[in-house]
Figure 1 (cartoon, rainbow, N blue to C red):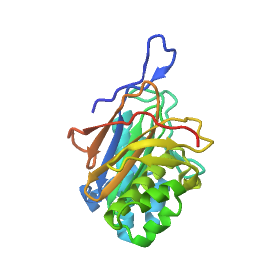
Figure 2: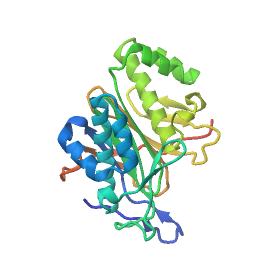
Figure 3: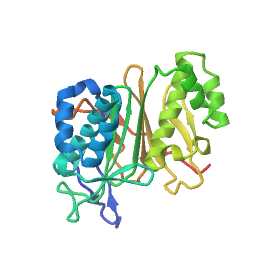
Figure 4: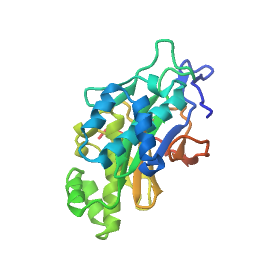
Length: 277
């Protein structure tokens, strides 16, 4: 797997990120149960193994093992360190970060960020160099009560946009388009549900795509790139990446557990959008 390193633009005086955004969608079924357990025994740290042991239901344990094996495999390919040697720490809000070796990464660069989401059998992982990234994945078959609760967290303008759609799948799709984008953005900020979802807003095109974004007052980055995906039918995903002037405007979408060398699908990143609310 070729990894582009960080390069310095001539005359810019700063490091420019030339690597694409990399995203993996991995269904649980792509990693057999016995293999997921074996990899977890060899790759996961003590903290991760303790969490896995606490799950009451085997389906939830399997989801956790596949998701965290995916994280370590993809990061190993990205930075050039063995899966079991990756040191992952968590912020006070629970967001994981990769602890960088004192002598730098074997495959170059000084920064790497990643974010993980999983929902009912699907795992989504985003990896990017020298930027912050957030991802979210949701299935459209969530119950009406859960979706109604979600809508109440939106801004009044977003609620009106949702209500304008016909009931059923069209309205459910609008709800989860907004929800995945808000989750991805708040996770990129490292705040998760600690960031009230009515303090920032999206204006979405009816047929897909972010037309405008108004961030909260404390958003120092100001501008972001967003991507909406439906990688498989009835599964919605969103990616939020902090915008940079020299970032390659492309996302590489990989499907399945990263064992082989199957070519990813290229997805254009949106133009930067943003502005404080």
